[in-house]
Image 1 (tube, one colour):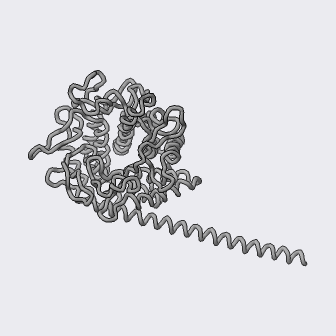
Image 2: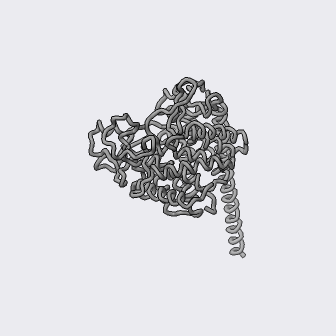
Image 3: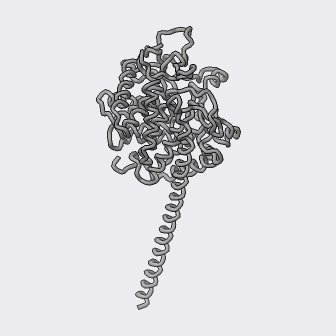
Length: 466
């Protein structure tokens, strides 16, 4: 009898403990859910505010396309040059917002940008898009004496996504025309990949020994690079989703493999520039002064690394429609390297760039700036990894820290928009311009849209069917 009573007491105690554990776990889940809902609400509100500050103020109803230059108070101020990259990015952003909000007003904004690209930026003589247009009296004229594969990639990117919402066959045909122009002029049939810097007629510059003509980016004329490569892959991904052409698929897969297996180092970061045969361009053997002067040509760019991990997965999904473990592992390695080598442990955020000096396995931070677009790409990458690898809780914790960093140091809660650099690394950024030809809105708006969809469980790259 005593034994039975002991069993009953033990059972009662065990059951009570089990109830307490269950209630505790439920309470923990409720707290996490409430916390996640709070972040989702904040990010949705932040996206709404960001969109409202850009549109309609950026729409140029006089000359077409979009205004480029605004000061820190969002007053129109500056030369208002029309650069291909920024104009095309507006088309992409407006098209993405049309889909996200289900609002045809953004379709109209995208159409406005498309018409400008078609009517003013396409080179009627040589083909391809001009890089930059400047105001000359009452007309716009091209400036510069080179064309860029990088710029034309963004032309394709904007056109493809605009076609996706408008079904305007003329926009798709212009995207195809640009792809074939790049195929004819920029693609390397021997070593694969693309040259970025081209003459106005699309000719290569590898046989030009001296810069007598004052060519832009002459130092890069013989090289290939990660930046044009990743954005060509990004553009081809978008185009392939609306035009599954066999040659386009071949070029998209070619870029995926080159970026993943050749441009990305075994350590997990991108080589910035490479010779035609993909030999890395390195200044390790140069003097400290020369290396610092040419930092922009050879360093570890943490923002590009975390962005590329996402773009590789996006390309893989478009090509294969299933989990690509190899690409997932490389994307994870790139994100992990950026966290390990480029993350600010004190305040959060990713530093701009570092360098592995000879004989060292330490990546020395040479530019500690917290550039706005890198933080946007970092936010997207951290939550993406958290969803793909939920067992590694650090990713979601860092995602939260990254959002808090952006909210505190990058978002202007007075005038709206994002500063060009975190105020912790540069307090003067509070008075920097809010927009210029290289600072538009596609990085941060894309990131916020992706993050919202991930938090709501409807993002294609983290869908269980992928």
